[in-house]
Amino acid sequence: MKCELYEELFTGWINKELSPEEKGVLEQHISGCDHCRTELEALQQLWGHMGQFETPEPSANMSVKFYAMLDTYKESVKEQRSLWADIKYQLSNFWQWQPRWPMAYNLAMVAILVVAGYLFFGKSKSDDQDRQLQALSSQVHELKQTMMLALLENPSASERIRGVSYTSEIKHADKQVIDALLATLNNDPNVNVRLSTLDALTHLAGHPEVREGLIKSIVEQDSPLMQLAIADVMLKLQEKRSVGSFKELLKQKDLDHGVRDKIKQTITQLI
Amino acid sequence: MLKVKAGDLDRMGMLFERYNRQLYGFLFHMTYQRELSEDMVQQVFYKMLKYRHTFTGTGEYIHWMYSIARNVLKDHWRKNKQQVQHEGVEAAETIAGGLVPDEAFEKKQAKAELHRAMGKLSESQREILALSRFQELKCQEIAQILGMTEGTVKVRIHRAMQELKSIYVKMER
Ligand SMILES: [Zn+2]
Image (tube, rainbow over all chains, first blue to last red; front, side):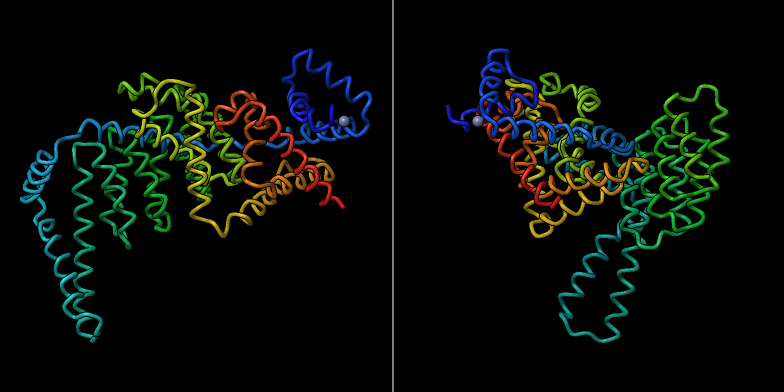
């Protein structure tokens, strides 16, 4: 047989899938073929070296995101309706908001005005028009914020997650937004909403009050998922002031074992 | 998996627990980027959730998972065509360079070289080695995932190993 015909057996040899008969056939060939013997040895060595590559572990974040996605998906399946029912639902939502959030009503109007403004004035720019457009867009911004605050109080968890995700569109989160997010972080009954909120707050970590709120929140969280996630965030932010809170958390007797290890590790990495 | 299809979405959580590391490992060896691999795992599970009615129940669940993962990878490479070639190689260097710090320098060096060589293989060669070496799948399973005969898989693994060896030897010189 020609050497190429043994190629399949080479693979079986190095990954140990050969039957005794196949092994015999190959052994017989390499005992008489120097070329194949050295080749096989070299490949086997290489295969062994490859086994030393580490595969890193995924971060805790990955499963957090998966479960949030699964939950949101479940709710969306539950809420599936016919198109008409959907429109009716949207309308009823719309009117519900009216008395509490009259500003929300204006959102559509302002958006239309902005678009109309661009269309009407075209590309010609005068300072005056610029100022008008700026005023309008700041109004849109304010309304977005109002919408977001309204969504945070929605009974559906997926709507609340949607509200939290709006914060990424708000350029300058003010105290009202931050307070609402921190309240959600500490009090929302749904762990996925709290996780999304943690995510949103991490992006706002430039604000000192956000950092302080996060540190205070460490002892408020009783779900292992949240405790792990918040430890990750503190590491990412290299927030040394959180060590005290973590030590406080370690005092809890019923703390999950995995979480306990992670917290200890986090403390050593922070000090 | 058939139970997931029937609408028992909680089952998806169990499947995730069972396979997420394995899938992450595969994607990591294909991209050498941690965050990207995590995002891709999420995409794969989202697609499995969304298209669960298309899973017929014939064949193994993990074969289906890998074929979705391969599509996600292809998608990524198509969208990032220009960067890809360098991305892989550079990332391999970063990873290899940042491995366990107390390893003997020489050993570390050799590992880094081999990693770099892996990064220079074609995507399909890297893929077949990732499946057989790092995922430790049997040739017959790989054949199902890639839609080839077992013999073809064996020959391709052999060719990929030869190629890897020749790149590696050239680098050492
Ligand atoms: Zn020979």
